Image 1 (spheres, rainbow, N blue to C red):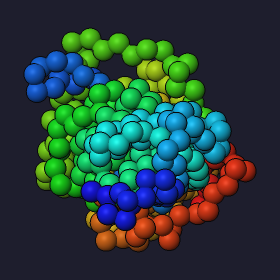
Image 2: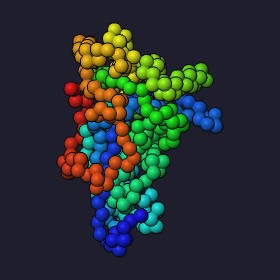
Image 3: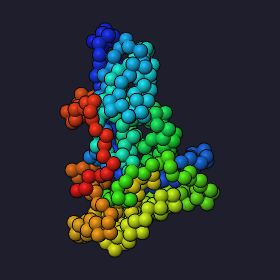
Image 4: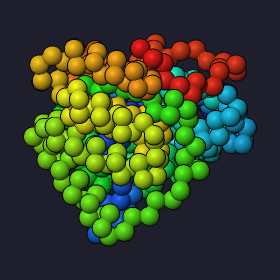
Length: 351
C-alpha cells in the first residue's frame, strides 16, 4: 500500500528505482510438454551476477499516460514495459494512470544471449512499482515482461533452476533448489558479434524432438536433485548441439574439443546469441590450473575468453537475484544516468 503521505499528495512527483541481473545463456532450451500435455517452448537459464540493468522512474501524477519520456530514446521495449507497469500499478491502487520520466543504464552486452532486453524490462517494471511504493509479485512481472517484449527470460525469479515458458511468462517446472556447483569459463563465439535473433530461421520441433527434449528435462531434474555437475554438463552439451542446427557457430566443435581435452563436464551456449561457456566441476582437483588451461586454449583457437564465474552460493559473485531488488535499500548501487547514457557495448569485456 502507498503511505498516507503519498496518498494525500496526488500532484507530487514520486521516484522509484529498480535493478535486474542478467544470465549467461541457457543450459537447456527446446519444446516441452506442460502439465496439460500441450507443447510449449521452454528454457532453463544459467544465472550470473555482475552485469545488470538499472532504471529510475519519476512518476508525474496528473499528467496524461502518453506523457512518458525514456532515456536513452531507443529502448522501445523498456518504454512499453513502463507504460504497462504504470497501468498495472494504478489499477491495483484504484488510481488513474499517468506519465513519467524513465532513465535506464546498464552494462549487459547486447545481442549475445545474456537477457539484456529482459533485464531492462524487469528493472523498469520494478522502478515503476517502487514509485508507487509497491512490489509486484514475480508472476505479475513475468506477465508484463512478456507483453512488453513478446518473450522474456526468468530473471524476475530467484536463483532456483526452473523450466520457464519464455513466450508465456510461466514456470513449467521448478527443477530443484539450486544448480549443482559449477565453475563457468565464459567466451564469445563469432568474435563476440551480436546475433540478430529476428533473422534466425524458425525452429520447428516434431514429436521426435519433443521426446528428446523431455528426456533431457528428466536428466536435468536428476542432475539438480543429486548435485551431479557431470550429468548437467551432458544435458547442456546435448542442448547446445541441437542449438547448432540453427546457429551453426564455426567454433562450436573447437569449444567441445577444449572441454574434452581439459576435463570440463560440458559446454553451454546461447540458443539465440553468441555467448558460451565451458562447465567445470569445482570438486575435481587442480581447478585453478584447469581454468587457466581453458582460457589459454580458447585464446589459442581464436575464441575470446570473457568472464569466469561460479554457481556456488557463498562465492563473491553467486548468481542469485531475489525478487525484488528495487527501492531505497538498493539505490546506493545504482549508477547515475543521464540523457547521454551510451548504448551498451556489443562485446563482453574480457578478463
